Structure formats: C-alpha cells, structure tokens
Length: 169
Image (cartoon, rainbow, N blue to C red; front, side):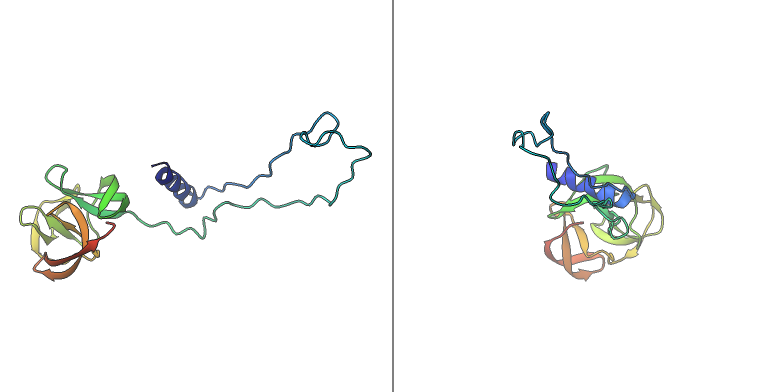
C-alpha cells in the first residue's frame, strides 16, 4: 500500500509541474573542523579538489513525464451500476475511483440487458436513454459474471461471446 501511495505521489509531482531539486547533504564536523567521525587532523586542511558549483537537477522532468488520463470504467456494485474515473487499476479491477464520467465513445454497459449499448443521453455516470448495441473502443470490458474487467476476444451484438484474460480497466 505504501508503494502505491509513493507511486501516486511521485506521479502527481511529475504531472503537476512541481520541480523538486536535488540537494547535497552536509557532513557534521567536530570543533576542530574535521569530519566528526575521524577526529582532529594534524596540520593545515587542504582540499583534495576544488569545489564546483553544481546546478540543481530536477528529480523528474515534467516535460518528459507521460501522465495518462484516467480511464472511465463501469462499477456494477454502486447504485445499480455507474461509470467512474479509474485512478488506479490492475488485475481486472479498479482500486481507486474518482468522479462519475461517461466513456468518450458513448458505448456504455447496460445492466438491464447485460450488454454494451450506445448511450444517447449520458448523465452522472449512467445512461438515461440507450440505443443500439455497440462494441466499446476500450480493449478492457466489464464482465458481469464476477464484476471484473477482461479483454473480449469476440463481440456479438454488444455482448462478449468469448472472454480473454483479466486487464487493467
């Protein structure tokens, strides 16, 4: 769980344009001016190399960070079924849901017919008026048998005739 939180935080920093800077740690010294662990040095201190100014380096380059848009996935267990932005997913399930949404292609899962149908009137993650059967543009589809998402290897009139492996919605 900590790993997921760290990944999300790192992604937010990369996508938000934050520019964390690398810093150089300081070494504690003893009263004589030598490193605290080595004790006093005899004779004058001479540097072994000339100090150089190092420009700060960004931990992540926001210009090179690829920030994926969250997917819009069907959740069958909430209020009879609705679509939500999926912020984190894997193994057929969404782990962190965001705001209600509608798929960009307009093809939504209809719990009443257990099939995908074109939505003429999307509203708050649900569809007020369904149309003809459709095939979603996303490769990952909702499987009502267990509530997970899988690839569909063969579509027939808005339903999956042959399910494939689990996928990340």
